[in-house]
Amino acid sequence: MTHAYHGVPARAIPRRPIPTPRGCATTSALTSALSLALTALVATMAPGAAMAADAASYPTKPIRLVVPFPAGGSTDAVARLIGEKLSQSMGQQVVVDNRPGAAGNIGTDQVAKAAPDGYTLALTTSGPLANNKYLYKQMPFDADKDLAPVVLVGEIPLVIVSTDKTPAASLKEFMALAKSAPGKYSVGNPGKGTIGHLAFELWRHNAKVDLLGVPYKGDTPAMADLMGGSIHAIIAPITAFIPQIQGGKMRGLAVTSAKRFAGLPDIPTAREQGVDIDASVWFAVAGPAGMPRPVVDKLNKEINAILSSPEARAKLEQYGAIVGGGSPDKLGSLMRDESAKWKQVVETANIALD
Image (cartoon, rainbow, N blue to C red; front, side):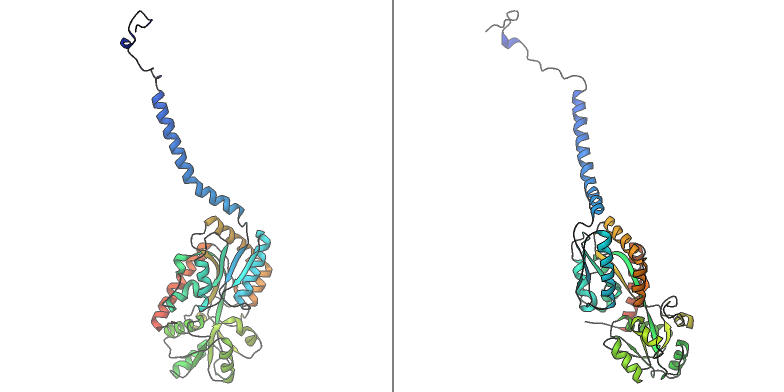
């Protein structure tokens, strides 16, 4: 077969590839590389963008606020107030769910194991957040690792009270009596492992005084024995004792806060009287570890606004609480500091609840 071009056979004509314009191969490779880089960048940014979008629209459904104590107590009452105000400000219902048991561990554990999306929160106390892990050998969660601090709600100082049956008008005088008769003077507390019990052990250790500790099942039986003269004093959260002190039935020897309690300003602090006791029960909002920081910050801002309202302050003061507030990091620092302090007390006094 002869090609029509100059009569040259077809097989003799070299089949040269069509030349690529200068730079096309390089441009194609560069385009491919840029495409891959852009895809990687979008993939990297996507979680952050989604997180920001979620925080901006949060909440889009009801929020569960777990209270790990029975209904009717001070923690429950404060939780219901915060839940009501959050429902109004955030546009979604906040449902308070009481899950009592094991000194607050059961309900707090449910929150620790929940999805970290901001829709399951806890209003819990210093026990589950700082103290309990040293009191219980089998803890279902680790507060440091499994919970995200949101905001401190309030602190209730402890008070040391007696009656006129004990010839001491102040803690300083009570200490003089105790040192004059080692082992004679008894101090009740609301129960083994409670903050009253831990504060008693801290008091006894720091002051190097021989006092007899008497644990009760709550404030009421301790108050009955104090009024009857069976014990000489009680150390416990101030809430239940405010009416008794105001009515003159009991005598406040000292409060264990850094400053005097505004509701009973005539009672000096323990430190004013030379006794190093700093103890309070505090309560806070926390969520599961891993909650997006924008969601944590949004909750923190809303709850801080609630705590600054006259209604919230009045409710907290009704229960003998000092209003909290502040950043999530402030609460995280409190959890760590309190945990370290009470760890030493629990180990020194050899306290165990299981």
